[in-house]
Length: 345
Image (tube, rainbow, N blue to C red; front, side):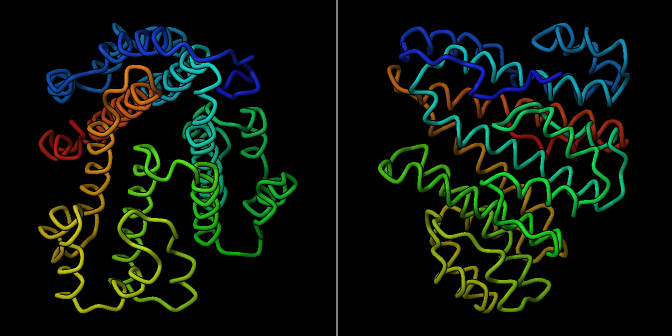
């Protein structure tokens, strides 16, 4: 089966914004609200599967329930529903949507490739790796599955290198370095593609995402130590508030200087309460929630623009990740309060 979301599947017509955004707003009206998440938090995994199968995930739950149960059923239904949702948007989107498809679809290629590389490195079976894959991307899903069936992560990289877009990869490097290179290349290409739209809401969101990725890496390096080579591998140029020079200073500042500098940006209020914690888990979780929250606020308005579509894409991603967090938390017997704190609502 090769039914993933790729642009090659579509003959693109001119974008009819009035039609497109009317349809998208109708789709967004069905996105789960806070009260639904509160209901899910009080359910067992099997009940969650039944509940979402009564709403927008019915098609996926019905078709997949013949083969899967419990958390596996929910995970696969979420992944397939996300792919089906992207398909609908691309069918309706037209040529203007194509401008943004690279940024949206290529992100999922990177997600799938990294999932496969991590699985191969950990010697996980192809069947288990497949559970983590989402049939969305510029690459054919059959091609993605073929990568998952290779024996080692070195073989995966060797096959990827035959594609021009991944020719920069080197199978002799450590897997963490390869992941960094994939993301650095991804963001570089995005900023190049949208270089004429420097002040657009979408580009600002991408730049903020780069900032948060950099801050996460800087905090890890400050906590665990770093070499010059590691610094160069783990920072991405093009952020909204931090260029490479500022990131280098953040990395070497004292704790007080670091926090004072961060507080000059919107990220300060997120980082400050967690700066003394032993682990970075909570602050990284809060930064991701902050990013998604900003995206939902920024991608509003513009009836005759692509903005409502971007707002829905983010809203749908948040919904899928919230359901995933709840179902995984329930499967791991986490307290409902802990799960709730991780949700983007």
